[in-house]
Length: 168
Ligand code: HEM
Image 1 (cartoon, helix red, strand yellow):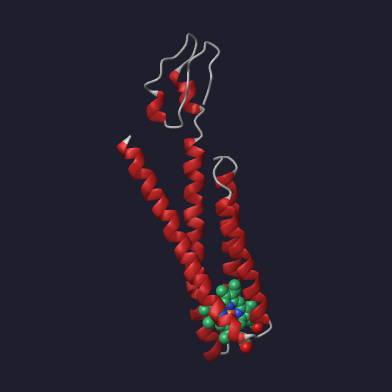
Image 2 (image 1 turned 135 degrees about the horizontal axis):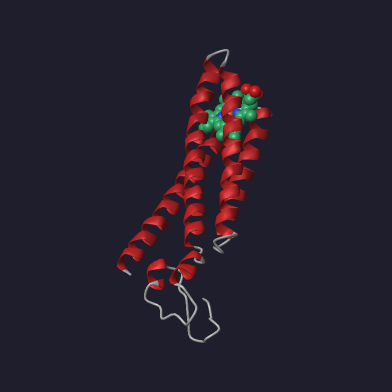
């Protein structure tokens, strides 16, 4: 919300609302449109969705490489590569969640999910190295389910947002 010097200018966060505002002398519509944080917010949300999609895909690949680990001599290297992939994707997820929170001024909740998933990833790596298969395998399944659930939440949130914008 902007209170312009002349008094009664209130700016909403949607560009189409900028078009209907009465501007005080010396203000240009372009100045207002440029100051909206909408684009940055959309970019960050898009990055979050891409990061969670990537994370879900690499977690999905982990049991496949685990099968190779159990059945072929090169499988151990492949499973380690996929473990690095999951770790990298979880870090990207955290970075994206921080970006959604900071410039967009959004909720810090996505950061909690991302930190939780990174914690599960570190536990999973420790259990794998320690060869505790009875916990390692079910935790891998849980991680895939959690990642898929989070992806569906983020995608549903975007659909709701688009539908609400279309109605305005
Ligand atoms: C459902 C998914 C998964 C299954 C079924 C699975 C299965 C396995 C199995 C059978 C082992 C060999 C343990 C042993 O040598 O006794 C292993 C090792 C390992 N796993 Fe997984 N895993 C899964 C997901 C993951 C994920 C998501 C990560 C990383 C985030 C991971 C990281 C590791 C690591 C670091 C090792 C040790 C590799 C080594 O000793 O060189 N695993 N896993």
